Length: 410
Image (tube, helix red, strand yellow):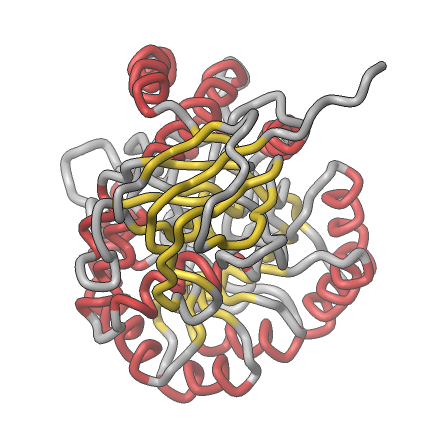
């Protein structure tokens, strides 16, 4: 079989936000070969066999990354019923397609899926990696690992004791997982106390050691001090939520050098009378202001933050990452650091070649009309989205999203 020619894309006359510091870098040309960035050029380049996009001074930044989603859920009021309905398999598959395009249309070119009831999202992610589906890139966890009767026990893999915790990790690895999700505390959206720790230190350490043996990071759902402390001591890589963390525990997250993924917008739309289970509404409304205040404290303390939304949960659709970034800014984060949370920091949770614009890195890019460091709202409507080195047609995305929408909610 003859070797296929390299795919080439040239961006002309733009301004990149380059490197980990998002430094302003004007350029005459930025070349993409297949799915990798070549170097900047300040002079003429060979445009033969290339798709050329003239940016006319627009800004280019790394593709945005949502570090906490549930990609096969459709943000319905009782979202998790999709995981227990045996007839919902096709709808969940269509939801992945729909959510993928909505994410791309919003400038989100990669995400971590932190838990589903089966390997469906893992399969979706593998097809994206093979180029069969458009994207975005997904790193998927498979089933969340929890305790008997614990948070998401009815959907996840329950484990009892260190040996079983190791086996639970191995099962997810065998299914193709590229990150491991553990439930270190109770939750808001399922029965139980979100502040209560779940695993013992010995159990969680065994799970983390097993995941790290396979080169996989571990994301720990943990809301309050006791669960967060056990997770940190066990060696997890990220703390998800930390809605009830006290100041001392937030300081510990920083001291351990771990990353916090707040997902603070996940509770924004929770309300009575819209079909959300009453227990979830009650816990959410009690927690909302504390959650927001603790996110502000984490920002004030300089905890490393990667952006995530928990998209897919009740009334929390995919594509709301900008709202999450704006909430960080309202709570004291600079716009530059907010963008960095969705690029540099979130990229480090997926793969080393994501999250910055540098020669040799992955060509996931977003083009916006002006400088997003001055106005985050510019991210609301990207001019161009480039995923895996390909320019994605916005009109095609819009049409296909509309076609899929009815099937997703039907």
